[in-house]
Image (cartoon, rainbow, N blue to C red):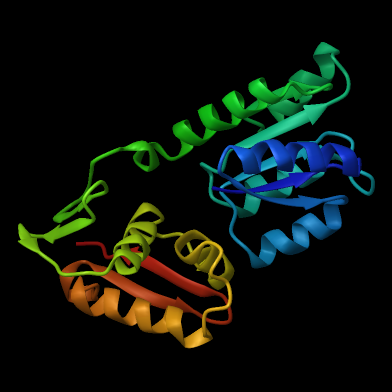
Length: 229
């Protein structure tokens, strides 16, 4: 999962990112709210971790912006150095899903992050078979069936298709897709992603007449949309 972390204490963001990276997540750190909001306008993230006292704006301002403009199920964990009830209540009232008080404990951080992600993205945690209508993904074997018919796909095509279905209606940036599907193979030619998207669209018939549309988002990436019947 891609997680954005805001804290003006660089040693703190390094610690958080080290812990989350060890747990298998991709962590992106910011030391001021302006930079974080600028990136949130351009990129997709699965979770935000916000320190309540950022250097240039309050965590509440960042959180309000996120709640107004980003997906409603996006989990937000706020971090504070104060244990007073007023700060905690203010953070939760502003829209945070959970909080932690410094100093952070590594095990607790991972546990809270994992709990929030499970709640926000329940299908991400299915281990064997994930269904989206007539589309069935068998994660252990890499088999994909549509209307009961096996569709021949490569592992990358399977991963790409599953990524889109897990994020129906959500625009995904090219950087997000690249990181989620190709992981560390970041030197792939730019056309490789477009070719894979085209193959997925064709093999799975992701067209309006079949109930879905896999469309480009100009200067951003792609989005899978479910058409209303």
